[in-house]
Length: 245
Image (cartoon, rainbow, N blue to C red):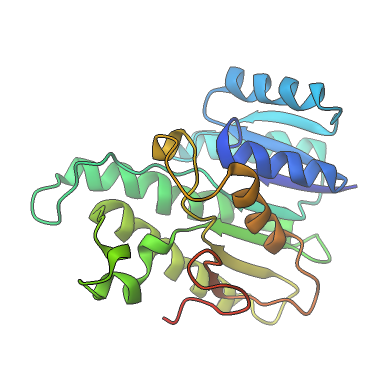
């Protein structure tokens, strides 16, 4: 049985990703900052008839928590086939390139960039044991330089400069990691799940949780000829096109 780790998996898109991977016969570790919330999510999926699941306490902003999660999962399996870096925060709706504080920038980057990189680095040794390792970093079309450089584009009217900067940084990390591992079986991509109706968006959006999760899982299940080092935003740039930057 293949194995997967999904961060921020106790609710929303992360929980649905865990569900879809479990339906594809993966054993799924649900990373959750609050273990009780993760365990409740596992029970919810058990109620749907899925049993190959386990909650793991994982606060991506804490190096100690990351190390503990790596040790716990390493005791269960010598191989990790899929990592979905889903945990993320927006930093709130009151953001300004001129006025947002250092602490606000630091908090968002700690989760969206440093957390994703820290988890990835911690689990690389397990991923390297997989014949087809896959990493999916959850990004956003709001990080598109093309969309947001067009000040007259309706898509660029709603701006969250701290969140957008963090996801643009995550995209660049994705590209560099893929470049370093380009001669290996790894497939590493950044994927926008779409504007999705979850707690994260105040349940506003154009995509359902199910649609969003399917977009992410598609890249977790890539075959050996699949792309790597790419950014995909199918809601705004329909497949197979990719964001033109």
